[in-house]
Image 1 (cartoon, rainbow, N blue to C red):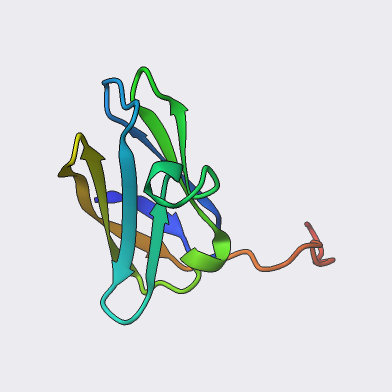
Image 2: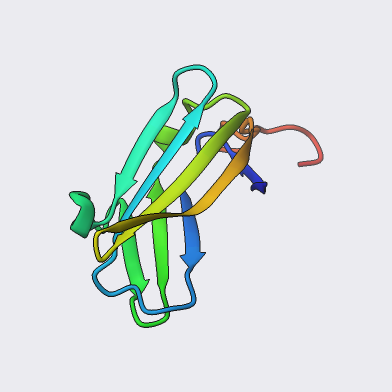
Length: 116
């Protein structure tokens, strides 16, 4: 299971394929049991670097960017699947569960409690 993430935070999930990923189409879908669904893709799959960014093509490293407004919608548990397409063949390279924790801090200026 992917480490517990915080609802309402932006998340960057780093993936390391350990091989050259030049020309790979990369897609990601995250969904929960109710109705939360987000889809991300790299530029070769119709998305952009703002969704899935290849940071080191030669060593196979890419980052899936998930915005705070996406994470807030999920239930406590969600699923993630990452699929790549290479030379016309599709492969699932990650299928896992994600645990989300409710965000605790929701203030921007500390209150004036004694002893703080």
